[in-house]
Length: 455
Image (cartoon, rainbow, N blue to C red; front, side):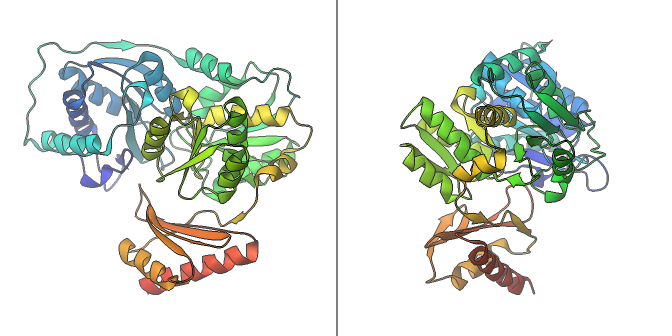
């Protein structure tokens, strides 16, 4: 089974448990067959996260891919950035079975080409079309003359060594670090990478459990950060690192228990990368703070803007040979990591920068913060296009209106963006201004228009 709605802009994701199931092992088999037939490579690497449905879905996909002559290397339990690493390290396409931050009833697949490069939107469309035809019985693919071989390989140690080779933590002051894995894959990767450093690590929910018994694996929702915020204060820690379910995103909390915005972390890491390569390109997305633009320009770098989503950002990273990229959703991309996103590498850079400074994190990040943001506000609406058009009309004459990744309105020292989610039936609003009062007024005006359209 493969419901139409599981094919998203950047990946595949849908319900696999309970009422309303959207895909299953038969669908995974069809996906594997379609991927094997469409891929120009004769080999690939696959992995899965801690969700209970992962092993059987991956096994079905592998059976489909090998039936089309593709050799498969299985690396087993892995974070998504481990899969990106494996793709780059082994120089072959990859598939990670994960639903990222979605609840336990979901699962999905993130795909890449060789060297962790994103698959094209056209490939995703072709994959969706062929796999649905196979699943429905409209198309039957004969097995290849040679069936692909399956091998298992443990790359966790190689992954950890590689990340440690990219950031120098030697000689930094000893830091007390809270790590909230949310029962996700960071429970595997963080001890492997950070365990050998002279750090005082305080782990929260490091055991792998795809039922997420403590909190949902989505750090974008404030309630999922509360445990880490409390732990920082309770243990008088220097900071906390909070990961999503597949550990490709990392949120940072300062010593006061306050969230450091991903835009601020983007600016901090961008400055460090530009010290290594003056004049380099930094990729940001539509909702990244204008502070990043200003700071990168002051450091002699150049900013390139992308649509929201890892597929789009990675494409821009490759096109412009960018040294670093950051999204306001806490995805961080590194040229040294094949242009792919890795939350743990971002965390290492934050630890290195903080460990070389005598100031607490709350004071350090003031250097990279210039505006007040709303955070992401989600609204469920029936007609997304109509709501966006109504908001644009309401702000006609008040600012510059841009269409692309949703609608963005920019004024003197402020902007907001209203865009459809890539994965859910939501409109996402982000607002930024020079002070809290202006931000709140803009936020409330936009939300009032949205509410009027839905009334």
